[in-house]
Structure formats: C-alpha cells, structure tokens
Amino acid sequence: MDPESIHTAERVLHGGESDRDLLDFSANTNPRTPEGVDEVYTAALEESRRYPDDGYADYRDAAAAFVGCDPERVIPTPGGLAAIRLAMERSLEPGDEALVPYPSFGEYAREVRLQGATPRFVRYDDLFEMGPTVLEPCALAVVCTPNNPTGEAADPAALEAFADRCAAADTTLLVDEAFLGYTELPSAATLERDHVIVARSLTKLFGLPGLRAGFAVASGQRRDDLETARRAWSLGTPAARVGAHCLRREGFVRDTRERVASERERLRAALAATFDVRPSDAPYLLCNVGDRDVARVLADARADGVAIRDATTFRGLDSHVRIAVKDRPSNDRLLAAVGVGDVGGESERE
Image (cartoon, rainbow, N blue to C red; front, side):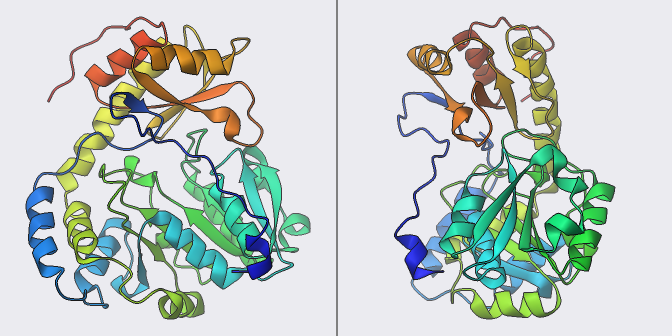
C-alpha cells in the first residue's frame, strides 16, 4: 500500500442497514444459512483459546472442491475484499494503471488508488472487447462476475478469451466471483492460468456477512507470492470451521440457487410494470426509476419498513436503485413498499 495515497483516499458507500427494525434489501446476502452452523461455530469458539492452524488444510480442501481446483492454490482470506486487496498489493505499484469496469463494485477503484495506482475506467459492457492498446499499459484488469450492481455473469468463453488477451499484454487478471456461487457457471479458477487471480466470498451465498471468510485462487509465482504475503492466521477458527462446513453443503447451495432464480424472475416481472429492470444472474436487480426521484423512492420504501440500495453511488448511474432478492414473504413486503402488486404464482416451498 502506498503511504501517500492513504491521505487522499476515501471510504466507499455500501449497502447494509444498521436499523434492525427495517427489512434490509440494500445488502445482497442470503436470508438463510446452512443447517449446523450454530453447532460448528460453538465448537470452534471453544477451540479459539488457541491460535488457528495456519495451514488451514480443511478449509483449503473445502474451498478447492467448491471451485474445482487443487487445494494448494487456495489462499485463505478474511472475506472476498481481503482477497482483492491482497491481489492488488501483489500486482500494483505507484504509477501503475489498472483497468476497472463501471458501473461496478466501488472498492476496486479505491483499492487501486490505495496502491498509488490509477484506475482506468471502461464501461462493463465494453470490457471484454478491450485489446492490446488498452491492456498493455495496465498492470491489472478487473472483472466482476456476476457484475455488481448490474447482475450479468460473464460468458465463460468470453472471459477465457479476455484472459488470453490479458496474458498476451502481460496484464494480471483479477476475477471477483463474490456472487458466482448463485449460478452454475464454472469458476475462473478452472482456467489455471498463471496471470489470473480469483477472489471468492462466502458471506453472500451462505448468509454470514459478519463472519468474514473468503479466499483467493492463483497459480505459479502469483500463488506463491500471495501465500507468502497473506497475514499469519488469516482466518479465525470459527470462520475457518464454519466456512468449510458451509462450502460442503451442496443441497443448501442447490436449493438457494433454485429459490433465488424463481424469486428473482417473480420480482423482475412485478417490478418491470413500474421500473426498467435489468436482467440479472445475481441475487439482486438493478432498477432504473426513470423520471422518479431516487431519494423519494428510497424514502417511501423506508417509511414502509424496507431499505433498498441507492445505486446512484455507482459510477455512471444517476436514476437507479438496487434491490436484493430475499425469500417470498420478504419479497412481497418489498413489492408493497415500492407500490408494486404481486404477480401471483405458487407459494414458496419451505
């Protein structure tokens, strides 16, 4: 991290509602957690009287099986954002440029700047068309799939072709897959390219954002560098034990994907009667409110006990909100709060 850049850096606004009396649709986390989490956490808390095993063999095994790579390629981190920072610390120096898509997760540009580097912004819809003229000056390129806040997942063939162009340009490719677990698409970890670093988060899919568990996946010298640079005892014992437990809950993951896909389509159809709703592969929908005042839309929903995300804080968006996909009763409350009627359908199976 560049010490001089810290003086000019700023915090980034995120979703997440502190008022517990509000139903929170501003953060894209699963409202459910896998069975057995409480028991695993309680046992791990008792074992936290000693330092964690810094090898994290069980956690690496579970993470590797989840994304389809060798365990030795997994780098444990306290959340996906920690994996992103670790990758940028390894890849960027003061004066470098990094290719950053927009609209997308605001922490990318912030982390680039904290390294003393400069973000070079490109529209997300144009990202995979970038060639050597753009890539060669950039030490790093970032891809978010599914993209936050727009929701579309990258086509695996297009992502692989982009990875090839990054390799030819000697550009490290960082692929943020925080929400990819909601899809059945393969992880970029399966590419096993020496210039590709993957960042994963457990907190979204498994509904445990306060646990702070994630990992990076890398190969070759980049893998060795990340493993050397990661902090000792990267994860607390509860995070490592609960994380490994969650990653092995195949039935929970399958049921979550099915539920979110069904509810997302139901929400999209209902919201489309009032807003311009972007197609999504993620557990959220980006809505253009048109001529309506975004602040008023947010305030009206809040008055009805629902918090939704002001998406105008994302670069390039000026009339948008982002709405998470929750369970059916919560989603019905959301629809009522934004003045949209239910489109019907069978009740959600519990």
